[in-house]
Amino acid sequence: MAGERWTRVPKGPTTRPVIGVLALQGDVREHAAMLERAGARAMPVRRERELSEVDGLVLPGGESTTMSRLLESFELLEPLRARLAQGMPAFGSCAGMILLARQALDGRQDQHQLDAIDMVVRRNAFGRQVDSFESDLDVTGVDGGPLHAVFIRAPWVEKTGDDVEVIARVPHTQEPPAAADRIVAVRQGTVLATAFHPELTGDERVHRLFVGIVQEA
Image (tube, rainbow, N blue to C red; front, side, top):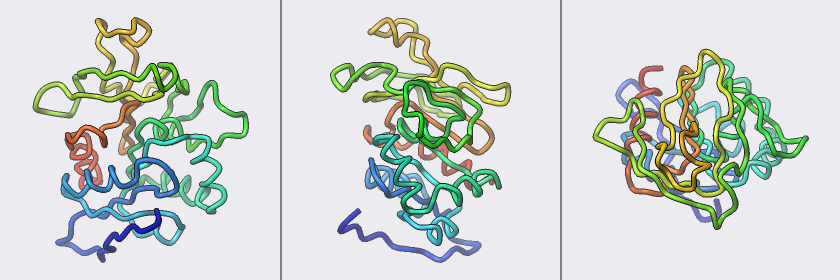
């Protein structure tokens, strides 16, 4: 993003993990701030060289079709697919969740998928911007009680493969009724995805979970 001043820190045995934020479009600054609070070094990723320098990558919320096109324009699509296939940890929120999926419903036919999580997601499943809502969720792997989650034109997960762990669902009492019991957070190995925006609440527990995944990897 124009005007950003992020410090690029060389990796070493005593340094914090270096986690990139895909800086093509979306909530880049917000994720970077949360990663720093969670114990990582954040750096923007726009080029293949920058991607090669990080220990993990966050794909932020934004607009998934735009991000898909920009990945191709910036010649990041295939390098990113390759690093994910090699086991690089990744975390996607909202649009990032859509990109990480094997298949996205209600999207453009030419939209690219990274196929990092064996799941089928539905774009804008909860409705338009005016249908945004908030909910308290119990998230597996996140201690300290329920997590307050913000959903903005969010997807939900329609189907998961056998190796995908469902770590959060919308409570069955949630309004609107269509949201109740929907899968909104998953993990497959070192790849994490949420339909909601943990970068917008000031609660860094999901980012701490991801930083821990990166450190273990």
